[in-house]
Length: 91
Image 1 (tube, rainbow, N blue to C red):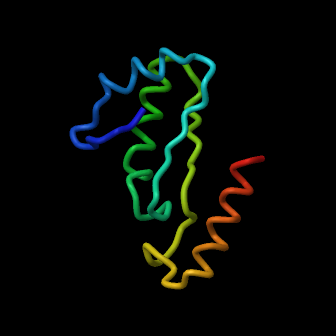
Image 2 (tube, one colour):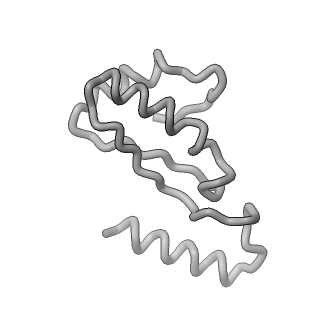
């Protein structure tokens, strides 16, 4: 599911989708580094949804690691980050 609106947080739209897939893992994907996107904002809210559904409040993060800037500034470093990310995602 794609979340377009973060504020006010769409609890009533997300909860039924999570409930629909009882065996699925919940994953947050973003292009920004972990400390610059919405992950830190949505995490406690998704945890509340998971607890209300009597599920373990595990949320997997898929995205760039914590970084001081939004981009590396070097194509070769970006390619290396992407290669590492894809190899880890395929495990």
